[in-house]
Image (cartoon, rainbow, N blue to C red):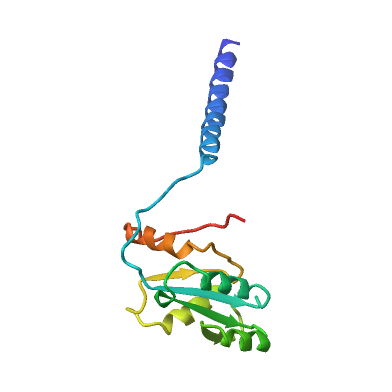
Length: 163
């Protein structure tokens, strides 16, 4: 009987430790992060790659959010990879100050679209390549924040959706 009591106590301690461990990390995750990087004096060149597979409805919102950036317009190019977009959508995209690449893969994938776009870019033309979805809308300071983070020494940066 004493053995079962000790075994019960050990199992309870293991479960309690697991619960407390997860609770601590859950509480820590609710604390707002204030990662701020110092303002970079250099404005790096961006290639903003937006693969758009049948995203006729959303791609214009994404493009508009990048065109409204508080970042020098000559320091970034918006490159839309049109994969199975409607002809009318392609005509409207061609009117915008973007680079429009057309792809028509039999089996489409984001990877194929990105590889196709990257193969057409010069190696030294851009400092940073941003991979976005066609339905991503960003805040006006997005490119400044990415630029500051990159200038601080980060080689890979991952953003996330907040809405």
